[in-house]
Image: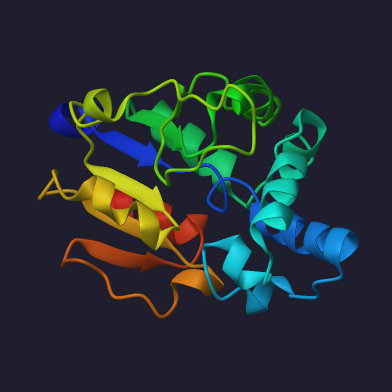
Length: 207
């Protein structure tokens, strides 16, 4: 594939696309608050609801989950780095756009580097309106600047983030299969459920 395909731009979410964040949070919720909710039973992207936490408990969970040593401990989603590096080798532009606050940038950047993704830019975008649980909770990518970016494909697990794709009518969204998105309605025909990174590669390569 040459020409236009070499300039293909791909948006990739971080948590639960590149790494197994929810599996880790499931264990933390049980250790910290005695909430036994196995990964496969996480019903909502909103972990406060999924783990039946009050606001104080939720903020404590989020603070714990954003400590650098915790962020660095997340397991890679199988096949993620191999597929992303394969796209880069083809000349595609890949950007990781996360809802994590900018205070998490350094360990997030280190995680990417440790997993062979050092050539991929990382942006922190306020996708979910989260604030309060971490001091200096700002974001490195302003929403107005994000809307100036163009993508051909997006890999995303959160239905709450779909609103950030409405300005790109030709965008193809690969919804990474997770328990909390299995019952959601897709906003348009450009959305396709993606069971794993092998499937994501096949869909992008087919065009």
